[in-house]
Length: 177
Image (cartoon, rainbow, N blue to C red; front, side):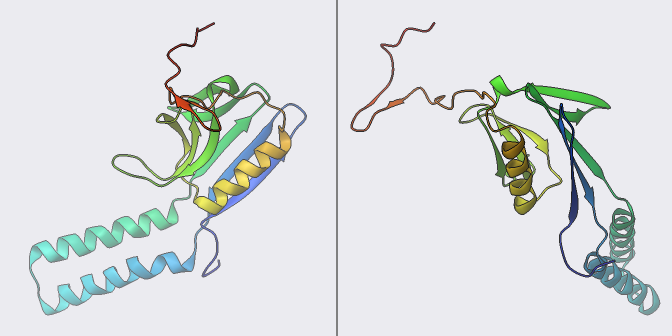
């Protein structure tokens, strides 16, 4: 057990037909400080008297955080020349490279979690895994691009604007194939 360090351990399994990336959460002693402090506050509140609501909140929160520390999670991505497969509702969801314009780390916002995302267009992205932080995502993206350097991805010109060195146009005169 380590005090500091990364929150995940990354494993890269490079097979002839696919690259499997496994991220397993690591138990760090540093992550026990908050639940231990809350448990101590719960005991002090219990011994010296406090409102029942405070005791309930402190006890419940410390129990939840202790339980979460003991539970480890593993996420697995399977990457081939055709697609990326991610765990989804007990099975796997497949995203073709032709649908993906890029891979990136995104910071969570309203109703979204931080993690590795597959960008489909400028405004649409699919979360591949929310377990990874930015440095882990960079390692995963580098490993995928090293293993599959010539994969054909979707065009990233999804904004509707055509950009030239001096002119920006709406692209209304284009004919769709």
